[in-house]
Amino acid sequence: MAPAATISFFGTGSGFPSGDRFFSSCLLRFRGLHLLIDAGEPCVHLLENRGSLLRDIDAVLITHGHVDHIGGLPALLQGCMLRERTKPLPIYLPLEMIAPVRAWIDALYLTEEGLGFAVIWHPWLNGEKVEIQGTLTVTPKRNLHLEQCYHPLPRADMARPCDSFSLEIVAGDFCVFFSGDLSSARDLVTLLPTSSKTDAKSVTVLICELSHFSAEELAEVLREASVETLCLVHLSEEYAESRSSLQLQMEELLPEIKDVLIPEDGESLDF
Ligand SMILES: [Zn+2]
Image (tube, rainbow, N blue to C red):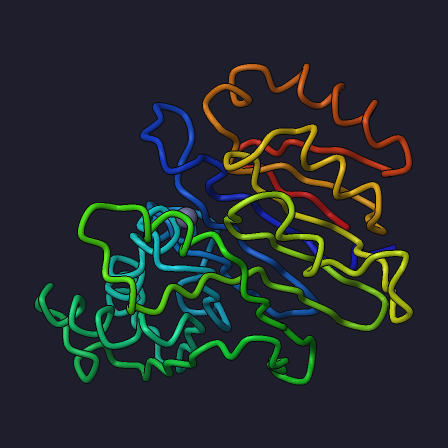
């Protein structure tokens, strides 16, 4: 039977520079749709390496404005232009990012008019489901990651919006949940469907970061959730160095989860 979805992990690294891991981006293929989730560097090269995807991707979904999740976007737009894309490109992202990102593109001597295709900027609205081509829905769910990372910085503007989102993507019984970056594993308590909620829906695949909290903290939260497969990405440097023991540890902590996977950069998984 053909898989419902394929997720290609382009970059599974954290925000730390790494010799062997790229920044966050992955490609979700679902019934002919191609969605790029986060646009960390060097997503343009990784899409180019997979055929004509620069012309074909249907939308870009950005979880938040940290550079390891959005830094590859201008090069992606330039690549689409050079590969003569004509199809409009919807980009979903936090509202407060739209004006600065447009100014950034302008600063790089690109003009939206000169790209040769329309860029359609869509702000995420917390909890508001977006339908993509009648094939699936994406619900952005606000988490506390950016607030926690930004507000403690020297001279941070406390009035500045700090929206960062986890994304729930649903089509029928299939549900893939991208944690994005979180402030702590506890963010997931209110974001994930849980067995105690009456509208409980099981998550087919949870793509979860593991650099802002421990494996034990995550396991504690996931014991209450209904998750079939767990994919760990965006590992802290410490976990990245002990991947096989991390996998064993999570399997022991969460025996009810069917599969615990730690994908490599470039790996594609069918679900
Ligand atoms: Zn982040």
